[in-house]
Image 1 (cartoon, rainbow, N blue to C red):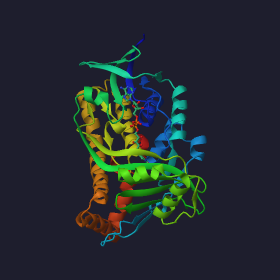
Image 2 (image 1 turned 180 degrees about the horizontal axis):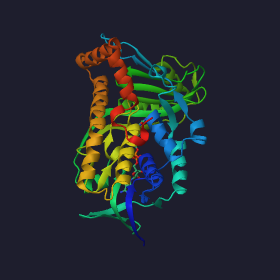
Image 3 (image 1 turned 90 degrees about the vertical axis):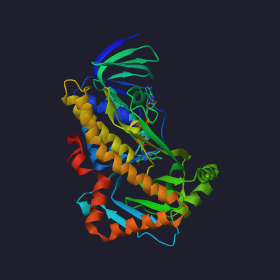
Image 4 (image 1 turned 180 degrees about the vertical axis):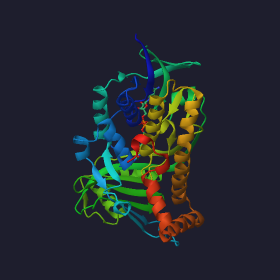
Amino acid sequence: MTDINTKAVVVGAGPAGLAAAALLAHEGVACVLVGPEAPEDPRTMALMSPSIRLLERIGVWSGLLSSSCAPLRHLHIFDDTGNMIEAPELRFAASELGLDAFGYNVPLVQLVPALRDVLTKSSAGRIVAKVARVDISETAITLVTDAGETITAQAVIAADGARSMLRETAGIAVYNWSFDQDAMVTNFDHSGPHNDTSTEWHRQGGVFTTVPLPGKRSSLVWLDKPQEIARLIALPPADLAKEIQLAGHGALGLISNVTQPRSFPMRGVSAERYGARRVFLVGEAAHVFPPVGAQGLNMSLRDIGHAAELIRDSSDPGTVDVLENYDKRRKPDIEPRQLAISAVNHTLLAESLAPHALRALGLRVMSLVPPLRDYVMREGLSPQSRLPEMMRN
Ligand SMILES: Cc1cc2nc3c(=O)[nH]c(=O)nc-3n(C[C@H](O)[C@H](O)[C@H](O)COP(=O)(O)OP(=O)(O)OC[C@H]3O[C@@H](n4cnc5c(N)ncnc54)[C@H](O)[C@@H]3O)c2cc1C
């Protein structure tokens, strides 16, 4: 049994927790990461340029990671709902913003080991166990793991996922909702080039998104009704390849080498506030929403950037003032984005025409008003005014 005293603890060793601990250690904050090793995850993450800057700062971007990721230079959105009122197609290019790329598509099987590696070489402590008990007092927060270790700290970054125990202990209320929808993820080869383009097909039932990988390879996130996703997952690989080719309108040529697909249930989780009682919520402990527009981990890295800056710069980061400051910084970024994405997703699941017409109208207005189109492109990349300093250009 060990007793540890430190400035900050990060709970949860998923992508958000690993990045948070690596960043705190890089900023010279005494910290310990507590959580079991996460199982291998086949997803790839479209990470925008501010997120890549954070990975550069931590020291995981150069070398292997950058060479196993593909740049995202174009984003195309097509209406494939077959509805009477059709939304116009939208084509965005990073060059319109004077950028080489919006960001990169990063496989978690590469990102997670790279973060673990940097962490091992850092000053951060590591406990591979679950937090079983939490005590919060006026002056400190104490965690007890299921292996019996006790860790006392001034503040905790809770990266313990959608069912966060830390969130509950801090007394932070949460709104949960679900969509009648699953996501299927897989990677595949294609005979044509992707031209560094991520393409979203807005279909009745959900968005079908291909995201480039190095070479003639792409990753896919396909949202649809759970029974349709179950049918697709049960198909032999050659039949699934044909379905992907059809749904993607053959834009990538012949599809082959489809990896074992995995499904994820679609739901929403929204915390009432993002910090309280010495606990900073980050990642899925703070917000969960469907993977449309690649916002989840990007937003999590912004949570981490803000939390790390506040913890680094405060003599006691667990005080009410610091946590209120964190909450104020995160709300204007998280809430409108979560609302917009959930609304777009709901319209694709709606059976009546009105929500589809509303979505089509919104996209038409966006395509006809250049300043609005520019604003949406910039906001999709990052909320310029609310970026943590360490993620700014
Ligand atoms: C299909 C799909 C595609 C996506 N694509 C993108 C994308 O392209 N771009 C993007 O930005 N985002 C994307 N996202 C979102 C992204 O995947 C999530 O934001 C991210 O994985 C969340 O990571 P996390 O570390 O917060 O949560 P998790 O990965 O759930 O990690 C939580 C960790 O906490 C641990 N834990 C739980 N309880 C305890 C405890 N008591 N003690 C210690 N540890 C505990 C768990 O073991 C787990 O390892 C996608 C999501 C989905 C579903």
